[in-house]
Image (cartoon, rainbow, N blue to C red; front, side, top):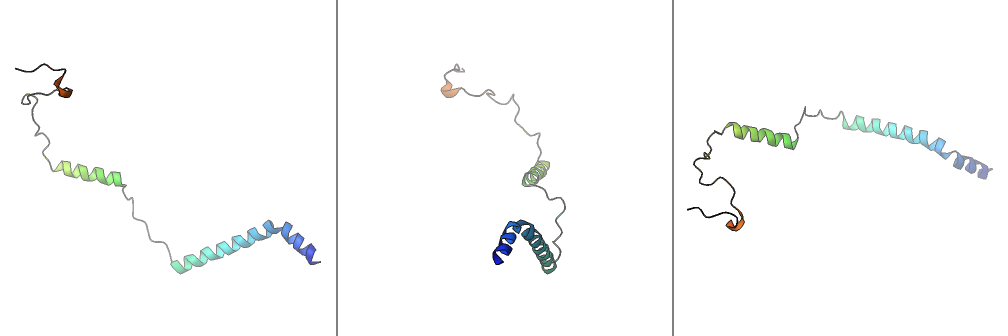
Length: 92
């Protein structure tokens, strides 16, 4: 008789264990929620690291006077120098 019962339980195991596991999981999650309390509220709209970096750069730029650059007329040479001056004639 026991062999017939065990064979039936083995063949119907998924149909038995799924509802039991579901109930155990539901009870466990509700118990954990009661013990821990409500989750803390999240901070509204936190910026990503790249957004924070851009904001910091914009604030740094806002404090500087950007138009103070060297004029091209004042520079002696405004073309990049060739490697080892091979392709450029010497200036007199």
